[in-house]
Image 1: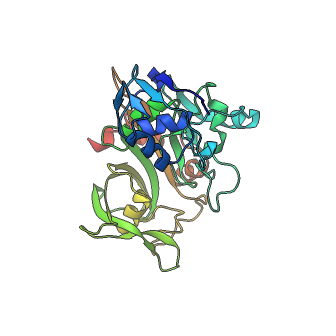
Image 2: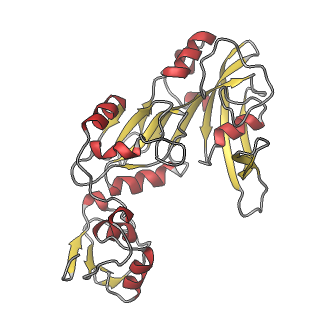
Image 3: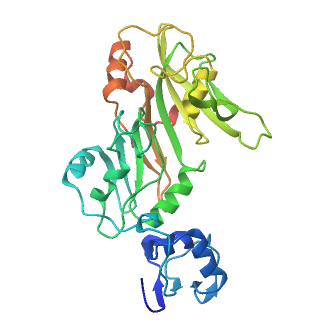
Length: 333
């Protein structure tokens, strides 16, 4: 707790961050406590009153009053200071880094490790190891998530300004995302766009999953996925490239199931088709490529090579990565 009024200048690495998140990093407090300080004018931006969702710009000055929360804990503060790096975590993460610059790390996440902790996820997860990649000032932060069983590209922001920019890009149509999947059976037609309304529900087996929703339903979300069949193994399986325009939970798995050709190894969205013999176990879904707009110049394209389950099954079914071409977007032109 500070015992006096402090005026702090917003750094380049925190430009674009919401005011409430910026303040909570310095003064752990509940959202209600923060709103009260804003209403009473105790927190100000460039001398003026501001709202919690105000986007800060580098060089702005923020007035912070003396304050000590009665309920909030340090852990409630986004972008809390990094902890002491863990050598084992660094040894695990470093080989996964495909790209690093002043804004981000791009990792090639293996299948089988959770991105975040939670029920049934066990003790180790990517988010819990990110202190190891810190610059000592800011703890790196996840920009998006992948299912535990999905392999491939995971975008990590190095500082708050990067998280704000990259997060906005990732959830817009300005950043292209390409996934590869192996399906049970061959989608028909071999290329197209899938559009549907989807919502959380319960499957026949009693487990939570996404189900068909309806336009106008408040809990339903619109989902759009472009797909192209790259190669087939007779009529038993297909290698499919997927390009989602929206980012709904289980969107790609749900859409392939709705098409009648579930992703191989998906025990939540299964279709009644015979599974090819001799293929590897596990979900066959891989976050293959990201095309990330930069502040200036050409977009950054990062591609994740196959490994584990996907690589084994490609070899078994005779799929060659070269069939997709060098440009990950070429298939969708």
